[in-house]
Amino acid sequence: MVSQHRIYLVAGARPNFMKIAPLWHEFEASVEFVPTIVHTGQHYDYEMSEVFFEELKLPEPDHFLDVGSGTHGHQTGEALVAIEDLLIEARPDMVIVVGDVNSTLAATLAAVKLHRPVAHVEAGLRSFDRSMPEEINRVLTDSVADLLLVSEPSGLENLKAEGVDQDRMHLVGNLMIDSLKSNLDAISHKGTYRKMDLTAKEYGLVTLHRPCNVDSEQALQTIVELLKMGASRRPLVFPIHPRTVKALEKHQMREQVEAIDRLHLTDPLGYFDFVNLMMHASWVMTDSGGIQEETTWLGVPCITLRDNTERPLTVDRGTNILTGLDLEGVKRALAHVAEFDVEKYSPPSLWDGETAGRVADVISSYLREGVAGSDMDGGRKDT
Ligand code: UD1
Image 1: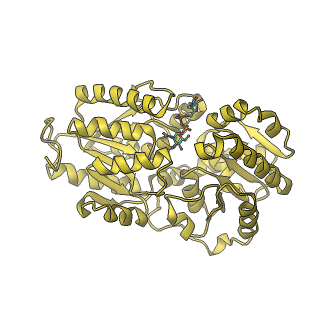
Image 2: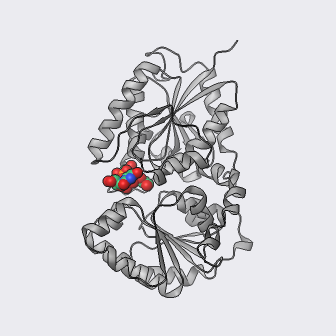
């Protein structure tokens, strides 16, 4: 009998969970693989973590590392040590990391130094803005991961420009869309927007958490102006990220935001509730990476309060407009989104809900070709 491949799936923060879920289900259903979930604990609140496991029908993590919050060095370092301990013991055949958070980089570093093969899902994305912690995580992860699994064509171009070997990279599509598509019925049945007394396509949805948008008082003041302007046009729903709550409290601006008329502030929402609000929104205003992609698949206009994006396909498709943190830019974008015609729209072709299967195929061939042995030194292609 052929031995099963032991695959460690690492997740740490909210946007990771909807990326590991389709992979876990794919591997669990296959006789070829045995998946194990490692949760670093970077995000730990119920609404930032556990609710996603429940809704995405993931089992409790096999390993919870309880890394928690802290400075970048502290958080990444804690995760690195904890994952290393685990991998020394477990010696999986493959470690899969997703996205660009501190846990992604920590797991990659731990694994490659133990000569465990690493596959990076969402490889090649580049904002070319090295002031973003995520950009540093992306560049470093891609430079040492063995398999680079890419979600959109720009990823391939970026990796080529960085001199990466063609055989390390594979365009597989977007795992996040697998989760979205497979849960669409359950999401629709939630009726979240109706329960909030909102009318479909007559409200805006806002999320903000990037350090550059929320950590300084000046940026927060612009945010308050944006919220006032947005809410003067339509009711707005704003589920607040813990980082943003902290920043508003630090600068004594929370009450000012709470006082804005027609602004519905909520705690962070579960996946189903949030996507339900997103799919029925007139437009979304955000600085998230994943939401730029989800709106592109749903055909919902997205105004991104950043000067750049590592996901240029979302702009090319016409759903996403980059405005930076700029009141006049957002006003222009709002005029533009009013003309967006969803009837003439189709999502990117490889964002089809079948990405997990393609990832499994790539990993299966990689492991079957024997490039990843089971001993500590023989595991890497380049050793
Ligand atoms: C992290 C990721 C970011 C991702 C975001 C999604 C990095 C560098 N950043 O940013 O790419 O878009 O997650 O949310 O990895 N906190 C809680 N409860 C939690 C988790 C965090 O209250 O469950 C608070 C902590 O006090 C912490 C702050 O939120 O100080 C920020 O959390 P952290 O994980 O450091 O970064 P995010 O801003 O969430």
